[in-house]
Image 1 (tube, rainbow, N blue to C red):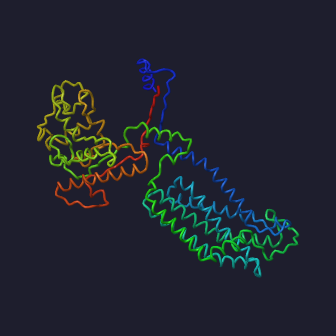
Image 2 (image 1 turned 90 degrees about the vertical axis):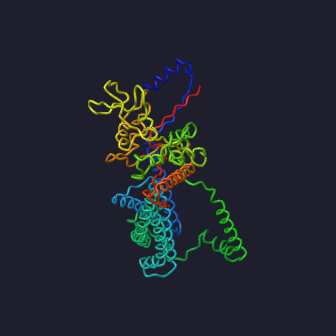
Image 3 (image 1 turned 135 degrees about the horizontal axis):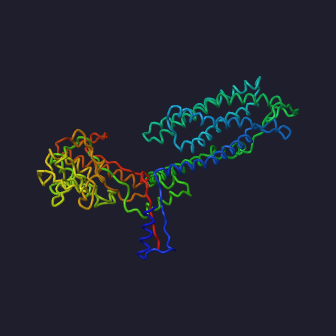
Amino acid sequence: MKDFTETQQQLREQNRWNETANFTVYYSAERSIQDELNRQSESDILTIAISYTIMLLYVTLTLGHIRSCRTWLIDLKISVGFVGVLFVLLSVMSSIGFYSYCGIAGTLIIFEVIPFLVLAVGVDNIFIIVQHFEHTKQENFPSSDIRLATTISRVGPSILLTATSESVAFLLGALTPMPAVQIFSLYAFMAVFIDFLLQITCFVSVLALDARRQESNRPDLCCCCQMISSEPIVKKQSKSILQKTFTKVFTPIVLGNAIVRACIFAAFLAVTCLSASVIHRIPVGLDQKLSMPKDSYVLDYFYGLETYLNVGPPVYFIVNQDALDYTNDDDQNLICGTAGCSGTSLIEQVVEKIRDPKHSYLAQPPSSWLDDYFDWSQSVGTLPCCRIDPVNNTFCPSTSNNTNCIACNMTGGTYDRPLPHEFTRYLQYFLIDNPGDKCPKGGHAAYKDAVEIRNNQVKSSYFMGFHSILRVSADYIGAMKSANEIAKNISKTILEAKGKPYKESSEIKDYPVFPYRYYSQLKYSYFFLIFSF
């Protein structure tokens, strides 16, 4: 806040600020997307409740077969419909509870999608069981229990086959390496499976009790009372309008005419071929703006990224552990970009790719700790960067004013680089030296975590660059492919230079260099101040 106030004061002093000027702030933090998704999920609770209520009303009003106005209270199946929808909801909750107990964390998509998915599947089975049970009234059975048993024996295999195929399909989806899809498939599999078990056991029991209630002329919502009904429970049922439409119109036209069947098949084949021909035009991935609510401030932040940002997310080219001996001049030449370095070194290959930003998605060359270390160690003059206190035998930072400090005693080899026995010792000084006016090449700020040193040897390191602006999912995917291709070319060059064979592999350890990217810039907090005058 203090810095912002100082900026305002400076602008006023330069006559570039006035009280009527406007500026817009686009902001986001590491938890912004999570907070917005949680807010959206909480708002969807009302939508889920409304959808289940509407489905409950629809099921309760359509399951029963009303014989007449005098028996409509008896013929209603409100309790059956309520229990059927309740079992669907319980199956979702049971799935969530089971995997929570197993320690498999759920995602927001589970609570957003699975309730609707299982509702559609569960209600379909409810209609199949109840409607077929109602149709068996036309047959003579000793009791309603035998009639229900016959119904289950007829529709049970169909429901079992449907539930099995859906469960297996979701279970196969759990084989994908994508964690979000994998967890969603597991939760959906368990919810569909539990819903089938509840329908084939508990729901059937409720339906049997409801049949006895209806036979004893008791109203649905008040089964303690008994009504006198002159309407027979079992009688020949008249066909509904929908049944008459399929019997007299749809079936004769579609199945009774060969020309119509041929036209339908040709139309289906044409649509399939047309869809297959344009499927390659479907964009891959999901636009991150689509995941946010329409009133979210993060949408403004995404807009600010696309409009005002000059570079994209950082990309790190990591040199694998023990891939190179950094004290060796030949291995140094495979990485660096200064005098004496190879024309196909890591830095040079990346710089070459930057000249084609549309295909490489690179905006800036990677910062090289090795090149800056050479410059730091070669600095001479009245105040060299590398200094030690001979009294205490400790390193003197470039910001230190200790008059006892003297220049490091580096012999200097090819191109004045540190000799092998000097390389790691003075590299540790370079990594703790803060840059400043006297020595801008200090590596503490930029390379503190870029180099891993163990047992007085450099094991692995990274070289950080920046992608170009990545706006849509296709850009992120293209940047990933490009970075992998660049890393493979660099790895091939290093292996050939060291006399080792190069082979395609899915293991990182087989490549001397591999890329690592921050695809989401929300790993950090970015603030954009856009002034309009």
